[in-house]
Image (cartoon, rainbow, N blue to C red):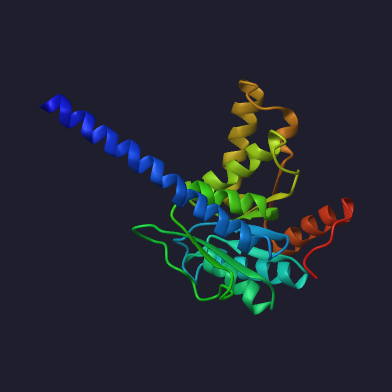
Length: 229
């Protein structure tokens, strides 16, 4: 009897997995259809826990306002904290403000600064990450936690392995990021040779909105591309 119950339970799991494929496909189709209409954008990553009075929240507002004024759109994770600041700056600058939200039991909720027709909701992290990468022509990363690190290293790995174009990855906050990348250089590169010397150059670490916009503009000029004018 127990063996029969075990097989019954396993068959139910396999059936549920099969039906989940359709939900996953639906999220991809929805994302591709909406994002393909938006045009090239810059993704902004960072912590959901940063409060509006924090210096990095205010800096993110300045950065994204400058980004949209230069003609680029902004994509964030659609939630609070740095994501909210990113959408707020884009909104204040009169530019494209996209939110790719994820259904979570805590922290995450839509922020009010996303364009009404550009607020997408996902159940699957991996589908959402595809949208960030496929429709971004640059990545600006503010201080964050595990989720931010996941998004950062996903972008670095895809560029390192030539799966996407060599778009700029800009980390904001030398005080926050400096120790991590010193460890990457001293341990991953110098001690173990687990990465190539050129991999370090995939990332730029800055402190100001001027530096962010300069890096983005130089990239677009170098490759003769045009932002979202």
